[in-house]
Image 1 (tube, rainbow, N blue to C red):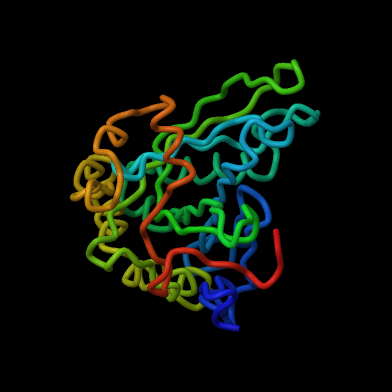
Image 2 (spheres, helix red, strand yellow):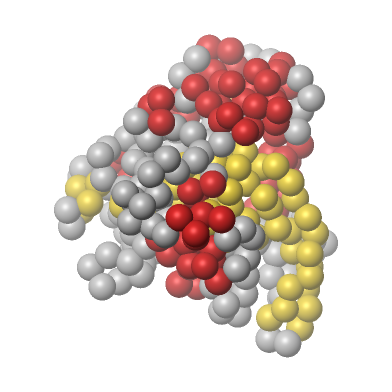
Length: 265
């Protein structure tokens, strides 16, 4: 089904004969690694932020989105009731592994690095559940172990600083064929990289030195209906935090931002 309630169905957009159906039921959703020429390779990690859950016992943290400046503060999945060591929950373990890849000092080491595809839950049809907007492709710049509180109890977690890359050369779109190529065990990393967005390829080639050039910037924030001052509120101010509920004018394969899978989550 291509559309549901007038919005593109994300499972239709990302349908693949090679990859399993994507999941966005959690905050951090990795696609399984494949055995590729040169070593294991993960096609992508899908990141979901749910502003309507922020501050609850389940999700006591508040992710911060400043897409006009290509920056996101995203919190890991360790919770107050977890008894395992911090960093070993599935989501944090996957993101810490991705951070190591993203910090590779050479282009050869960065080439297989896993891309993060970031989504944010939005309200549509008077419901906060079941709809997401695509916010962009991101690289992890930094991770920090922090202390958070829930139910009056302190617990550890990780906070990640993400850079969202400029997709203007692709008309603010991501070609799912790139992710499929990364999940093709018959393709080399170099072949899969040919389908990546231009900014991702430049980041692979030049590393974090290229970030000022490849990070997403809003050229006309007023035309997008946002206050230019909001873009300067980074990080963690109330103005910046409010961007979480208004993320993204980007599109994911189809010319409309919100996507809804067949089942509600």
